Length: 219
Image (cartoon, rainbow, N blue to C red; front, side):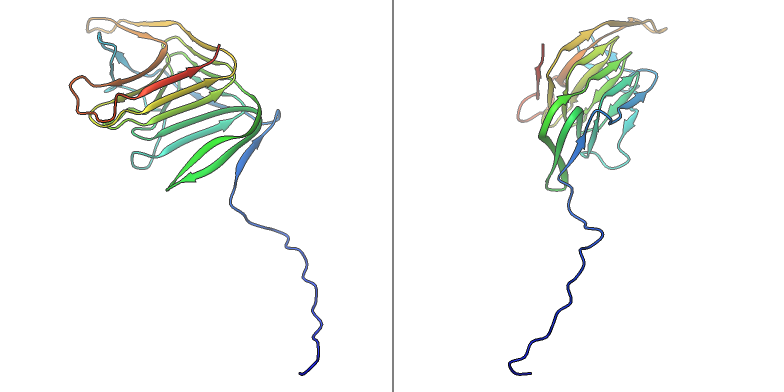
């Protein structure tokens, strides 16, 4: 048709749109996460390295090593509970109000502050553990207001033969480490477990790139 026009029918707006998620928004009505267990099952050597043969894994991967376990909630509480990601990453964000941005690095997710106005607390109580130990250990990244470890609870990353992982603990409020657990098994000597944060490399191992590090901020 020459010099003619065809009327078009306006299309209604779609009822549903799908887009890549950019972040998770939390507020005061958001709920917390609780992980319960019996204890971490760790043994502390005289050189302050850990025997992990009998460690309780708790929340862990059902996939190959090197993946990420990420928990985002308004309050994270471990009571004798354990989070284990051998050679992977553990990201814990306790947020009272704000947005945790979700990005992507290769095939893994990366979390960052997307506008957080307040943080919630994180408690690891009664011999809990957060653990990324492996031949090439993983990383641990924790963001919260008040962070409390008591009664032999531990955040740690043991490296056996590969590169050391990093531990980053960011408390906008107080960082509290308190309590010692004494265990008297039939074998001697007795096991004493301190509450703390540790990044260790096996003595005489073949690690490259350093022993890993831990960075803490808080009051």
